[in-house]
Length: 204
Image (tube, helix red, strand yellow):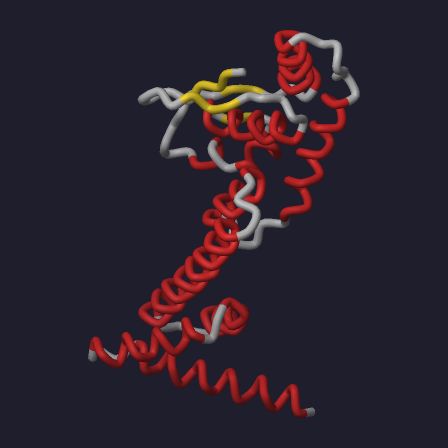
């Protein structure tokens, strides 16, 4: 019973704040926005519910802006955490993908990467030359896994983001290169990105 009462109080508070958001006074808008943002990402379902039950387009736009700001704030915290902890490419690429897909389920990405890593690892051994190792990786990634390439188009963010690159089995040089670098890191194959202007090249 206490939990239901708490939910009602929260909803009333949010409704009151949203009514104030429509106020033309800029100071009131900033104060109310800051208050809602301070509630954190957990308040998003309440905001979505209020959006669905509102007929006021102005309030709906405010709610959309707040949801975007909440996702952005959460993403910023994740970046800071990533930078100060692991800093590995796989975790970082998942955080980047969450910018466009805030509700991204990371399990799919992790499972696909592990499937690729395992299939490549089974074909590797200590007696292979660097060229033979790269040939094994290329064969599985592009022939067995059927990964395709696409031209870089900055209007198509899906081809940069690891979840969509793995899901569609198609990415541009940066998207595919990102997956390639993650795999070589997991397999202890010394492949690195080469810093060349307007190009994304990998080298052993």
